[in-house]
Image 1 (cartoon, one colour):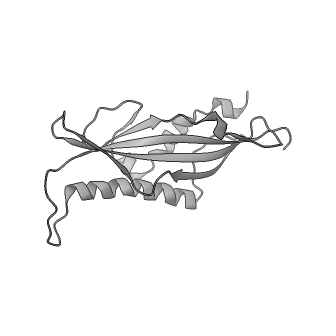
Image 2 (cartoon, one colour):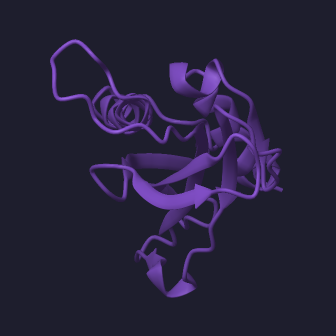
Image 3 (cartoon, rainbow, N blue to C red):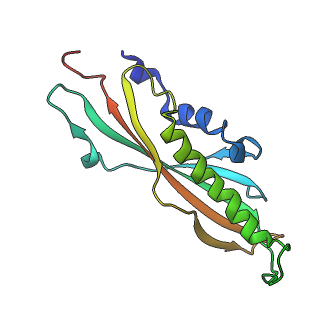
Length: 164
């Protein structure tokens, strides 16, 4: 059994994400959510197996995709047209944008999750430049705005590599 088989990629990504200030300072749930203000959900996403690209040496280029869903209290307050009065909803969007910017910065620094010795991560990138606003959950009080950010890790799996 290779180390790749023993490394839980979900746990590796969670361990990586908790170093992000926007995640570290807020609750993070895995494939479940107790939706409250400033909570995050780590949602696993399937990857099409046809996206895997085998190489002649037996290694395979693979993708690992996940989504972070963030819940923020939604304010029913219009934008103040005078300077110096921040809007809560705009501030919340900036907080989520900071997560995207953090991921981009980590990619530039080549700071990646640990997928084990048989995997070489080539990049980690958000799939969009800004968060997606998914709507407002008015079933709870206070209402919560729901945002999502999908992130994709591209890596080479060397576990079945024929020669080194």
